Image (tube, rainbow, N blue to C red; front, side, top):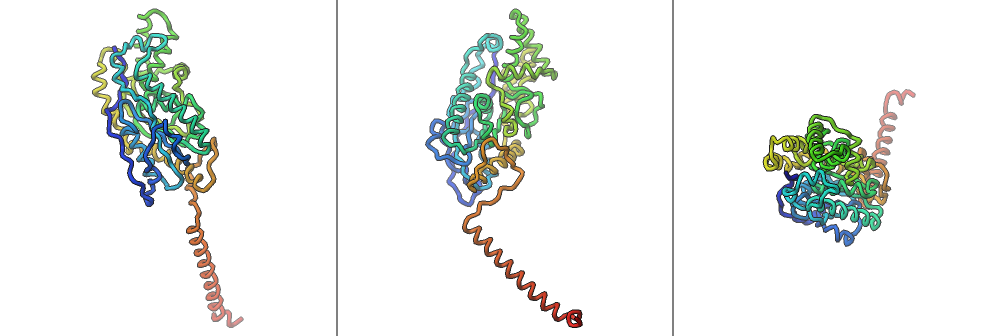
Length: 384
C-alpha cells in the first residue's frame, strides 16, 4: 500500500495590481518577495507570509492568494504591510504514492520521502525567516497563511520558534497536522472537532505502534484497530500530543488566541480518519479516495473562511492602526480587536476639528443671546 497526501494542481501566480491610494486595500498591493529576499524590504507594521500548498505555483497558489485578498478587502487603510512568500519545494504529495505504508508507519526512524522532506524544509525556512526578521524589525507583527502542506509548514514552524508574542494571526486551511486538542480556534469549516489530519494520524499511529510493540503482525493489527477506534471517537489526547510533539507539530498554547484552523468534512488531508479506515479495511483504494476527496480539498474559498478572515483582519487592523499613530502595540500584549481603531490625526483632521469647535462655540453664543432675548420679551420676565 502507499500513503497519499492530497494536494491541488498548480495554478498561475497572481499578478500584483497597481496601488490605488483611494482603495482601502491598497496597503496590500505591493508585490510579494521570496523569503530569501525579505531583508530587502523596509520594515512594516505587518509582515504577511503566505505558504502555498503542495504542487502549487509560487508565490502563493490559489487558496492563499484568496486569503490574502480577503484580508486586503478588510483592510482599514492604516499602517503598512509587506508581503513575503515562503520559498520551499512544496513537493507534490503524489510522490508518496509509491512509498511503502509499512515503512512509513513501522520503520524507525521514518524513512525520508520527498513530501515530508519538503514539509520539513518549509518549516525550517519559515522558522529562520521569522527569527531573522524579528531581530531586524523588532516592532513588526506577523500574519501567516498556509494551505495544505503550507499549513503543515506553518504548524511546525510555530512549534519550533517563539513567534506567538508577535503573531497577529495565523490561518491554517486543510492542515495535514490538524488534530483534536490542537491549540487553534475553529470559526469556519465543517469537520468535526474529532477530525485528524493525515500527517498527524501518521504520527499518532506510529506512536501507538511504538507503545504496543510486538511483531509485525501485531503492529499491523494495532494500526487497523487504532484507526477504527479513532473513527469511532476513541482518541487518547495525551498520547496524541506526545506523538505530534515528537515530530515538531504541536502549536504552542500561547499561539491559541491568534491561530485559526479551517477543515472541511470529507477532506482527506485534514479529516483523514474516514478515508484511512476504508483503505485499511480494504473497502476502498487510494485512487478512489483521491477522486472523492480532492474536490473538497479545493473548496477553501474566501466565502467559507469569512468568519476567520474577519477575526484576523480585526487583529491586523488593530496592530497597524496603532503603528500608524506612532504607538506600536508591544509584542506579547493581547490584542483588543473589539474596539474601533482611533483615526490617525494629521493637519487636515486638526483643522476640521478646530473649525467644528469654533462653529460650535458660535452656535452656542447665538443660542444664548436668542434665549435671553426671548426671556426678556416674555410676560413672566416683564412682570418681574
